[in-house]
Image (cartoon, rainbow, N blue to C red; front, side):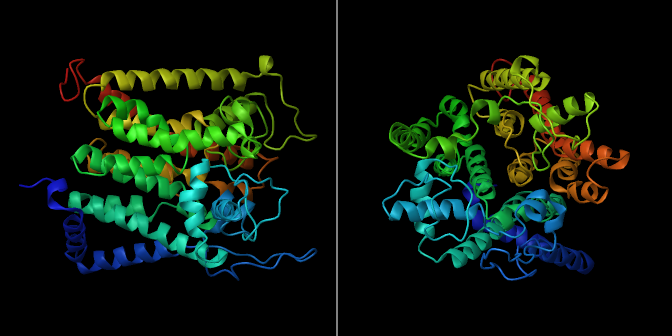
Length: 457
């Protein structure tokens, strides 16, 4: 029997389509309803796509019907669809105009109607931002969202074709992942990167070609996949590591050494703001382990979610969150080194998964739509048989189901027992998926004999 890599990807997709067609009629109807639900995630239909910004004119409501379920899509930028997409789009237009892609927020947009600060690698403005400028802003955003919508479809076909018996679990993971709502609404690039990493992982462990190329492209979207380099170097993918760093680091060094908005853009709030945490008013939207540590320390002080009179940050030496964050970063770093050491002789899915989850443990900037990375990881681990369907369902409940944001704000957000309790539960929900997957991967790696992966104790 031929392996998946030998069979060909399109043959696998056809097998998935045949499995769907072979479902009983009522299940095919249920599957069609699930696809309709997934289509309703798209940020269209609630109003005009863009309103002309005029002083004193309130923009009309826009976005998916599910936008109110998340902070990013339903609260922060409900009136600005494509806000993050336009950061890369505008960086591309600045490059075409011969300007610094990290132009200050004070600079007027060249083409984008609005934007966030460009916080990607410099090379991203060239290989993504410039081609996107082939279309006017709004059509480019529509085309990008359409492409994003198709990526989970391809992921489902790849998974269901390999393990048709888990068709419904894969359908839930790929088509009912509610954090995709803000991902589509923002026109973000996390799902794009997660999809590249998903295909990289499949190719890596099935022996197919282009695994390194998929990882390199993912690393050229955001800095984060470069953290996999230690594993890839040990696993014999050294050419990909050299290419990725050659394409990412020299442009980064150039913009860092010349007058540029790099420090404001990519640098952001620095190590203290992005890595080592600080006790602060719990920010609805942040859903990583660092945000959970902050809210637990916050509530331990008996503080409300919105304290009367505000809150003044503590000095680092008196800040329990700073100590806890530093300890978490050091412990997670040690775990990554241990995972690398256990699997340095041959690739192992569990080690890759631990490195993959770093985003949600180490970085404070772990927002709800970033869980597209967890979506891709859970689907990959399930198709490879490294997690059970039961654990995959737990991951969906924690990371893919609608967050508690809607109910939290409806309860008043702060000032009463129900709202305060829902607020804590909101920050607990997403990290459960990270911790459950990490625990499962550690347990798996502990069974590996020091002689190398595949030899169990």
